Length: 135
Image (tube, rainbow, N blue to C red; front, side, top):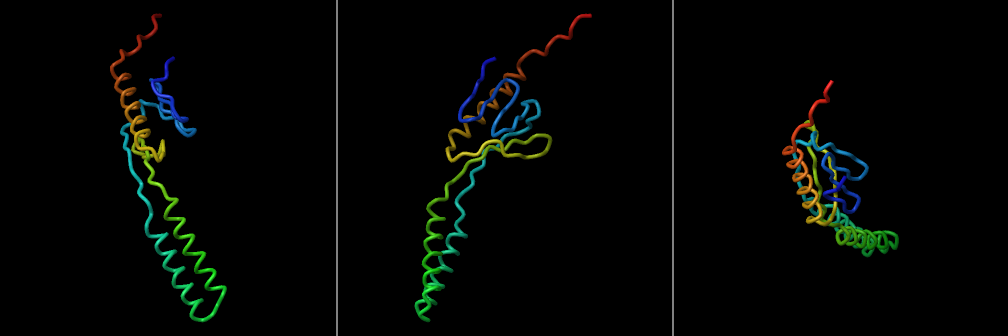
């Protein structure tokens, strides 16, 4: 049996999509969507601003603990900002329920998986139905 798509732990066969330990039968898949999740800007900014306020308080009132904690919070906010990645997710709708099948920072990979699933569904729809066994 040939695998139309097998890359990075995701495989699409003529009958199923297998990703991250989940198996979706192609006949049960109603729809596919690629969704982009952007960076969270609120948390790192608020964390850094709170750190600046705390560090200023520590500097004004000669509190080493407040100054140190404030500086650490600014650094953690900055690290949270630069380490965040934009992620792309393939959402599969089966029987009215939406589930995440694939998540990656590479949008082209997620789109290739989507195209492979759509091609496999189209190929299975074009295939003739099996004949019933003669008795």
